[in-house]
Length: 629
Ligand code: ADP
Ligand code: MG
Ligand code: ZN
Image 1: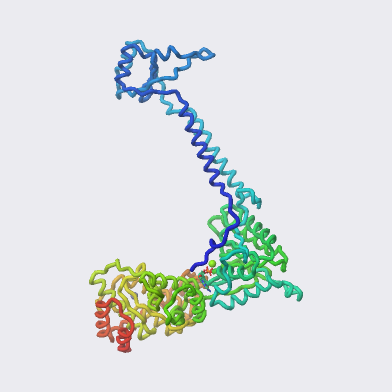
Image 2 (image 1 turned 30 degrees about the horizontal axis):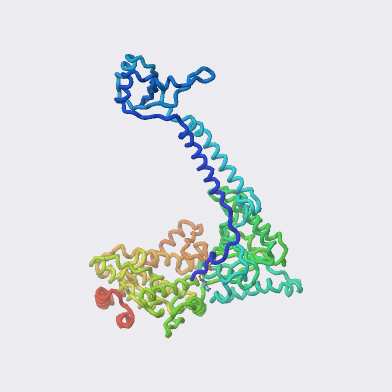
């Protein structure tokens, strides 16, 4: 269901100089070997035959080399001509033989038979190789230097294959070909669509705005987490506006060499001016728009980025408003963008493309299930409800997984069961039936997961499914807890409840076996992260109060680590203490709950060991019996 660039034709094929260089190298190799075929012929003969020929007096001249002997027959020497200078040209035909190692009798034999002989050191071959050995490396270096120099300098001449300074932008003409993305393909992000609809209107009826003296915005920045449809939205704008759409990615400007990026930016804007009115779309703007002044390890790469960015700023200032060029850029890291990019007159419009809510997800699911055969009674809103936090790309992936599963099971249409299995795959990873646990491990995993479920049922909401079938990268078993609705806030009690639930697994191991396994490491990691965030970001600790102790860095990419603010060692120690206390409290509570429900834990674990999966009514009948401690 991915809509990718390569469904569009690519009108600009770039020349490739690499092939040319290769030809030259191959040519030289060939030239280097060529003289071999021209060389005087040498016949190899056995050593015994050579000695016989010496005794018979047929040999005229012998040259002893390091590990072989070359010789000429008298008959051939007699035929040899003299050169103009009077020197004897050695005959064409010669013989070589390999002597026995350390044969000391050879000089005596040669002397006895009055053969002219001498020693010449083995030169290792052909003079032409020696000459080429001196000549080729500098020549190659020279070629490479010329090549790079050309890459840097070449301007926008399309007939020149060495055009590195040309922008790598691809131009799509809105209405030209069959496949095009339209607004109908984009769902669930209506605010962003509305903003862009305005842009399309600017392009279609510029007079309406300019008449009133209004300036049409130059730049629109789409901000949002990955997979929410920023690229898709930009493509849809192109499809809708019916103007040329120039697509380039921020990383495509960057090269190793200072100046290339700037040249590409210039070229991009020249291209845009020729095609105006048009839309320029710069994907992943953060690749070139990182704020300046950072200290990089590689000074030159920094300089290249700064020059590129400067050129970008200059170009954006350079063209007048109302020329019909609108620049749309996308990023998921707005906080690292250079402030200069965001000021009025540049990317002054910022449109947030956020993860969709339940209705949005339903709309996206509808778009992506259009061409998929669904069972008649399937209710997409249930699936939308079960996928909070999913972005458009995740939903597209989910639909595809469900369709694949249905196909694998030879079903006529996709059922809700396929969706559920697909959802589990997406969340927990593929089933790993091949990972066979031994009896003891299985038992530990069963108690561990039941521990999560029992604690969870009490402090953080209903569990949906428990399984001890290994999945994904590391999960030996898992407890699935899906929220019924979108949540935008978490109460402190809920945060603490989550931490307690996370520790429920390990606590069950402690209660049942009296010792713990390595299986809880992921739970511990998550619990600690959450506790640390509660203390340092949400101000949920009594002692430290509502003070931000961590710098929020990325609002749209989860999982990127935040950095501690500079705090005194006293505060750092206090943070550690608070985090520890939060975790210990949770741990204590989990143990208490499990001790209270010891019998239930036993029953559930036995059932799970037998059936491997525990869900639906059976699960609920167990969990309804959970008692508060
Ligand atoms: P982004 O650029 O924000 O990271 P993309 O635009 O590349 O995300 O989205 C990837 C894919 O996910 C799209 O090609 C589309 O199939 C699907 N998708 C994402 N958001 C939406 C949406 N709002 N409506 C429909 N499909 C979407
Ligand atoms: Mg994108
Ligand atoms: Zn666990």
